[in-house]
Structure formats: structure tokens, C-alpha cells
Length: 308
Image (cartoon, rainbow, N blue to C red; front, top):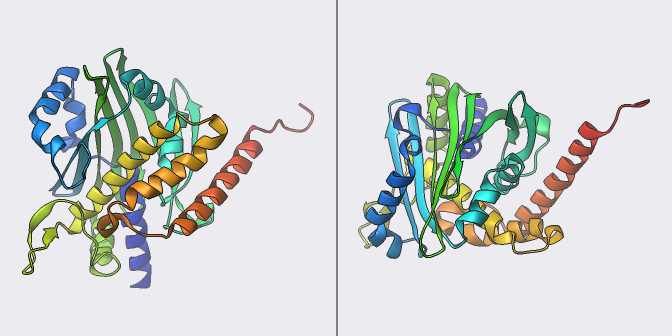
């Protein structure tokens, strides 16, 4: 049972955060520029007034063998800034590394494309050999002065999970803002289903997402739990990582890491019922150590061999 709970912890708070997508329900695949602008028009009311107190709409869905999360949001940055920032694999590693479960991310060239070598683990500090490795293929699916679509795909993950994808689509708006759609989901087999059931029955029992499904007897909102709750929490964590990355671009390069870390943590703490896991000092200490470890790993990889 202990081993099953350990598997469940990794699957739920680690691999689900990596952004897996179920191919049959991948809404982002259908986002042409016109469709994304039409979605912006249809969501005007929900972007204006919502529980998030920001121009954001979150949705999730569950199918047999998979679950998906989607966020549509206005970001307060011009499209040129967003497009330049989010079409670089190295920048995506900086974004993914903000998540408490990402232990390592290195971008590299593979053939004619790029890959992200990602290690996913617990919410605390962890040796890389104890974390799970997921390799994403990175591709800019579309890029123009008025549209960006980026895809990250990983065929396999641990515990019988598969078909991972992160998809980001963005279009400029007339007011100088940018409308984005962040989509992720994942597929799982029997082992993944058993691990998730164990997680939801133990350490994940009281955790919830953002979708309101009813009210408690005292009038408080009742939020969705289960797999949709898991994917909603991690969809929000990655969206807030994108916002933190974009916001830190205004700082000098040497100050951006600290700004990203502080801004991401402050953002998730606006939703403590769903997203609080660590105290700020714990998070900052862990991420600073992980950054130093990654720098050391990078130097070791790029160091010339003796005699060359």
C-alpha cells in the first residue's frame, strides 16, 4: 500500500502537472486564430466577473482513460512580447521550473527539432535519480505576427500514462493585450488509474479544484474534486507560471529568477484552498537549490572534454 501511495503521489502532483493531453479532446488543436478570437468574444462576461478576480476562464473535462484542463485568459502584455517569450524551448524550461514538482528541465536540439528533458518529483527537495523523467518534443506549430501555437508532446510517462501534450495558443487583441489558451491533459492505463485512486483516497482526499458544483449546507461553495480537481489545480499552476515569467521580463536579467519565484508563489497563494502546499521560505529555498543544481549539471554537460 505504501508503494501504491508513493506512485499515486508522483502521478498526481508530478506527472499531471507536466501537461498531458488526451488526443481525442484536445481543444487547442482546433484553435485557429479566428476560432480563438471568437472564443474571446464568447467569454467576455466570464472574463469580466469570476471567482479568480482576473480575466481568466478555466474548464476541465474527464473521459474514459483521460482528463483535460483548459485556461483562456487575457494577459497584460502585447503579442510581440508574448510571442517572443513563448516560442523558445529554453524559456519554457524557465516556466516549467517554477512549478513545485518540477525538479529539472533542460532544453536541447534533437535532429531538426528541440526537446525538453524534464524531471518531475515531490513537492519537496529531491535527488534527480529519485524523480521521474519525461522527455517532451517541442514544436512551434504556427507563428506569425498575429498568431502563435506551441506544442510540447511526450509519448510516455510512468505508471501507464501516455500521450502527454502542452499546447499554448495566442492571438493579439486591439487593446494591446494578448488572449491565450493553455491546454493540457493526459491519458492513463490501469496502473495509472489504480495509483490515482489511491491518491484520491489518501493524501488527495480533501483537495479540490476550482469548478463550483454545488453548495455546502452553510452556503459555502462546493468545489469539484477527483481527477478534474487535480488537473484544474495544475492547469492554474502552469498558467500562473506563464504570467510570472512574462512579468519578470521587465526586470534586469540577473533579477528575473527571483522575481519569477516570488511572483509565482504570491499568485498561487491567492487561491490557498486549491494551491497552497508550502510556505514561501520552503519554496524559495528549494527552487534556489534546484537552480544551482541545474547550473552545475549544465556546466558539466557543456564542459569540453580533456584534450579538446
